[in-house]
Length: 96
Length: 528
Image 1 (cartoon, rainbow over the protein chains, first blue to last red):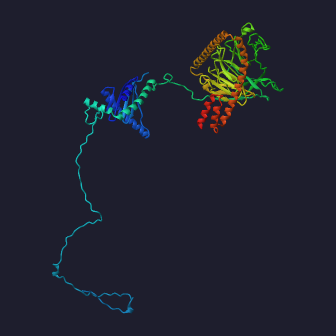
Image 2: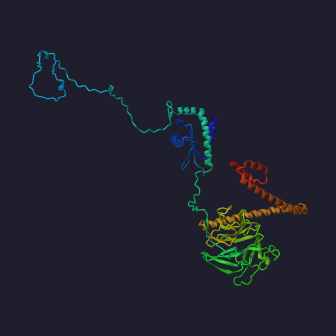
Image 3: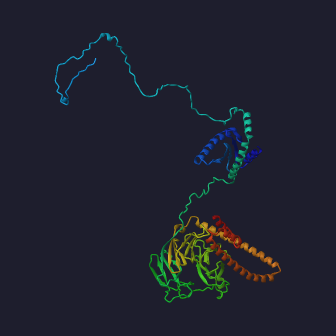
């Protein structure tokens, strides 16, 4: 439990990180540093996105699996780490 | 009642045709209807019946209960909370969350994800991986063609006895004519019937000839009877003929009429001033760089301060200001370089010819370690080289009197964008580097001198110095021979390598002469 806290704190303190969200298998945001409505939006949208991404990867090659998703937009970058249907989402703005 | 009719026939009458005859009818039997029997008659009802040979089946119809369905959209706001938890109740949601956070699975999972994510975050922070490179130079006109040279023509010595072409020169305007000077470079090998002619070749085949004794001295064109001036090339500047150096090549830049440079047999380049009064002042400075005679010496047509020399097995580029060493040089080639010249169109391109008959085209802005293009022009040694003023035609003269004309591809003979500034920058850079090195050398020398002056073992030091000299020479010889032998052994081993990899390894460990070799050999053993 403490490890998890430590890890999350470390991630959140990195340069450029705007927010982090942890979503569990039932689409419930367990832990978040953003406000509720934004969290709910992100969780819902990115869950669908990840499912689509994973199915794409596995469709092309069944032996393959999704390990990481990065969405780079003009303003920032959304990084999603999926595992066991849990999702760790981090939004970081690039530092030049 | 039986109705029968019996007739008899004679046997002899069997088979006879039947003769029929009419006779009146006879009533045989007469049955009258009896009305009493009519009452006994039963009338049956008629019936139609269809018949088929199959199984009996029956048919039913049933209607199920109606099910109402409706399609509409739904807005999913919150995640899939379990039924018992009301999403609007903050307390309940918090409690649920806390419960999930305590799960073992969740903890492990998140730790792993955390490390993965951190890696990517750090990556993002370190470098902008979506950076647009080369935004400014959007249009890159790279010539994707490989450098090439095409042989156009080979002009052969029309005489029977083949002589070497020692020098070539293009006609200044138009560049259609090429003058070739022949002489026999073999020591005392002048056969009696060798002609002393030189030829002017016109590209197209025809030629004219005129006699002149190909010597390189200082001639005034108006007074061809004797040289106007002689200059004795003595490094000590004393005008001493005994110590004079033999001159091999001469460089004269028309824009700087007072200065000229001479390349000598001993590997020195002497820069001289024509206008100086005394012989001593005529020699301005010397540049020492080659181990052998300097066969070619030419200033860069775009940067007159830099000149190219060719001698022994290297080509060197010098800057006038740096007298200690050349600013750039090629690595030691496999055979002697006989001639070189700059390209008149591109400041960073120069050509060299070698003893093994190869013409090298070097582009120092593109690659400095190797020539950009190597063309094997002939099997005989190439002794001379000249580029035509348009930079596209090159003439090479070989040992057996053949002058080969090559056309260089446009990539190597057209001025590229920024080439002049890039070449200028490069020469500047190399000059600066040499200057810094020179300064450093001077510092070190000063320090050593001051140190040795302080020590009292001056005389002993001087004697040791002389002994050391001999020892040094002996040591140098030994080193040289051992290196040559090691190299030869390495060459033989490389030919046998596929079979003897393990043996090579052992030999490698024992043989501690060259450290560089282990690099090669490990490469080879990887193949096994």
